[in-house]
Image (spheres, chains in turn blue, yellow):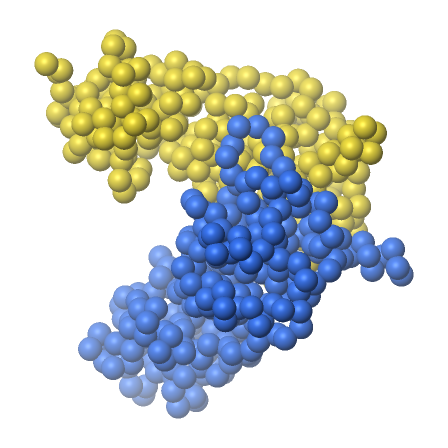
Length: 266
Length: 266
């Protein structure tokens, strides 16, 4: 017979809730929350969850869930709970029956030749989408300046689809702290609406930092003092592209140029 | 003294609500709803709203709103209402004080050399983002196959930022009906996870149809019988990109190749 956590006053439930709700708590604990069969599976591969809450019958209803269940039931820090408790913690409409607390990965790349820097991107969906595009385009380091949505928030983690475990991410940075991390990159390009440089005219095969700004206000004045600019030429009457789209178009142009070099040399 | 609409039982309010909620009503009426100072301003330039509801004091609180107020107060189909009525109709947290019913534009391009086809894209934000990217990349025609989220829904219209008034869009299509609209395009490429053709190896300067499928399931089997495939090469462990990102990367590659041709020839 498994002991069930049935009360929202349980200290594990309270702890999870604090990490889900509070950026401050996540960062003071250096832990974040992942949810769902897939992400918790990733978490078990890449990190060491410090707490797992699960609903046995929900997990057992799918093959992948059952595999996960077999993997975790013997763990000392895994606790069974009720669907109601889990639904109260869940960020999604149909919870899959598992949620976990995971330490934030702490890796920094010292030599990434393509770095994505986020300067005030606010929408969690945009941040998650940019992280996915970054991994797929070969980014080796993501740097988030202060004012960017928290990369460890439940929404960004969900939309990142596991990229948090694989991509070196440093957040909460001021420019002064970021500088030593990018000094090996001769090129720093901030994406703006108006620039004399079209993005496809830049040589993005060199070590490069690409900087994406806030959805409404673009990059900061400070950023413009540390970086040059480039732009995506646009037809029609729109003032701007979606921030995640703009960043992704730049990232995949860098990937395209880099594939081309390898091909031309090979 | 202006007569205020103060009741949710008012027939104008009911009509707006039906168009906001029901795809069927939007399509049988061939009308959709736009909200906010900016979009209603666009609507007045490009179309002829058949109904306007506005909150005078909210509009008057901004310069652009006041200009719009001056423009509409004399219109026979513009009615003042209360903040509560408008908030009940609004799709956003802080309504700007104006909402309008507009006829769906009915233009079709017979000769667009870049066509975006949506095959079951479900998320309204993705559809809106793709429409914006389409305009900016020089798409001349958007075709939506049955099973795609309604392009005239409030969320898609909001995230489209006015593109609905400028870009020829035909929706609710079956392949048989779409074929005559694309017969001048020799190339039809569906974006898929696995294809022997990398997107940047395709010659996208030719008349081309780019097809983006459903977020979870990709393009349909029927689409694969009518189109060849291409893919965006990805590094890392992700299975897929965000649908709006994938479509935008393809669209801007087409735009890049087309600019390059003009430049090389010029």
